[in-house]
Image (tube, rainbow, N blue to C red; front, side, top):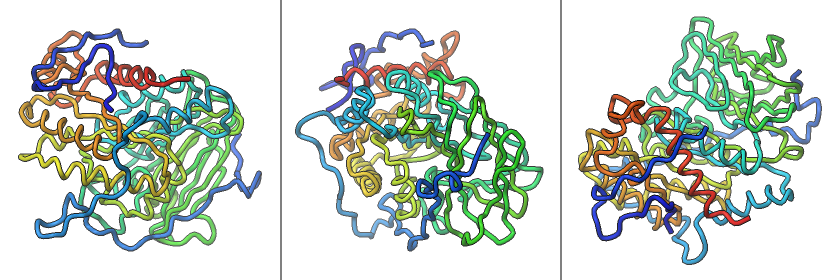
Length: 441
């Protein structure tokens, strides 16, 4: 089943570049350690390092044996998002005591969090604001719609190219798929929430993920300039992921992460309301510049599954394809294999997680290949049992990004690959409308 809207009819028996451009809608407008408060509620657990990950199908040599498909299969009845709808229906009926979480895996389109941010806002206005969710630490090439970030000093990533599809080091990089390592220049990362729509409750949890690399690594967590924790904690082991959870009380908290020694490795922060008091929707933006569908397969499987288990998403959005459009050839079978493998990992963590595949946007320099990638992703979504949303047709098909770029104000960026803030938010509004249109209270 493919998610469609009143203004977009997916082409059937015609080429995608013949699809008419859709009508354009108007754009929408004191911290304390949880350990001291309730030790039984603290998931300050470690993610044990697993054996090195085998090379995924996407990067295996031509002589390698193909990976047999495993995991979800195409549905014959119902809607691909039925489990997600059942979860938000519990929010609607006020019978749920946990958040409904959405994970957005994707490329640079997702890393800007305009497209995904518009979906987050629509879902939170409809079902309740559970918090901003996952936020990178020290990443200059990233933004979050619901969090103001101030980053100082120099930071680098591990792996150096986070979008790689080739396994790197031990592959233990946290939920977001890469670590940020503090360097020189007084590095620090500051988070401030400010006004939220709808507003958040005054009590929030902050889940910091870190990975000590040497015994010299050290960092401090501060609330409004006052130190509330020093990490690593006593007994923390080298090269192991840890989570430290804190609670803030009061409006407009400002939390800072300040490296004080060595080169601490940080895998992100998750910010949420207390789900028992204020359950709602949380959308984790996990976009990586340059990423491909095979990128998550380069991460240590056991460790990443452990991180996804902590989040237990009801829905995973897979927004890839723009970078694949630059490949010289398109192998549809490879998309099925990679999507199957990614969702098999997700379902190890949460068996009832639904999936929604988004096709790539139009791209000025890959006008002939982008439709092939769209078709391949649509076939893969159907084979794996995911919903599919045709971004390419929503934009107007072949050449639409040039038209969007020529507008005043433009809906596409000058590079012919990315969109403007206006363009991303418009896609997010359309996506949210289609997702909600299929929901039955």
